[in-house]
Amino acid sequence: MGNLTRDFFISLSNNKILNANAKKWGFRLGAEKFVAGIDIDSVVETVKEINAHGISCTLDNLGEFVYEIEEAAFAKAEILSVLDKIHEENLDCHVSLKLTQIGLDIDREYCIKNMVEILEKAGSYNIFINIDMEKYIHYEKTLEILEVLRQKFDNIGTVIQTYLYRAEDDLKQLQDVRIRMVKGAYKESEAVAFQSKEDIDANFIKLAKGRLLGDAFTSIATHDHRIINEMKAFVKENNIRKDKFEFQMLYGFRTEMHSELRQEGYKFCTYIPFGTDWFGYFMRRLAERPQNLNLVMKDVFYT
Ligand code: FDA
Image 1 (cartoon, helix red, strand yellow):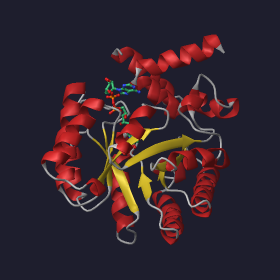
Image 2 (cartoon, rainbow, N blue to C red):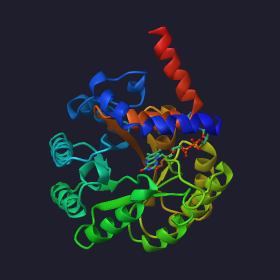
Image 3 (tube, rainbow, N blue to C red):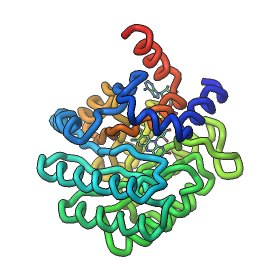
Image 4 (cartoon, rainbow, N blue to C red):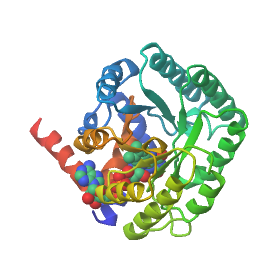
């Protein structure tokens, strides 16, 4: 897809009015192919079905552009109830969240307080919490808050985006933290990020291999079969244990590969987004892949 199309969808993903309005629409434009349900109750069965195939899940109660205390408090309460549900239903599932969702853009201390509450409850249930990585303006604050929280909690990890030049240095500081490796979903300037697919892919492969040789658990999060095949070969050549890493993919993408990888004996985790705040997430997925747009067109014109 051309950069113009990508930029168009990224700019839609950042449009606050559309994001706010979409919450009232219910799912539109085929979003239900990639967003599993509107609330936690509507996704529990999906998680159970996926778990039945030996695949774990991470649940993301979607939420972005949170600037009011009430919204952040609501998001935190929702995440706490997701943790209760995972525990009650005995799901093989952890939680992914964004710090902006629980107050990063409002007040740092307030955001940390919310995280502490979430991590305490998650810890009592033995559930892992992953902090998703957002736009670069939030990057340093996210790593700094992770550092604060790590002093007290070990059920926490984050994401490193390999489009960032600094990813390699940051990974050195995070050698004992569980990390999800991704290419990066936002539009960042060439001052901070590689722009070409070749550079981003090469950095992904180099950094993921480095992680696999280390001790901490790593999630290789990509739909790119070339990278997955390279990782599989690397793991084999270096006798890396299969319980030291997992592959991760987003719900609705390359579903057949989820089961194939699992059947080959690899750990696999499906990232399951849900909730009314689907617009930004969905627009970023359209920015990544033209075929997703084809699905949308079919939905708009044939249903
Ligand atoms: P990419 O889109 O580069 O595609 C590479 C190639 O793979 C394509 O050319 C095609 O051949 C093949 N391919 C890809 N998708 C396919 C499909 N659906 N069907 C068939 N072939 C396909 N980002 C971020 O900034 N912060 C975060 O916290 C996260 N979290 C996250 C979690 C998980 C589980 C995943 C999988 C991804 C993220 N991301 C993310 C998004 C990530 O940064 C990235 O934008 C997308 O994963 C797209 O890059 P890929 O590596 O998947 O392949």
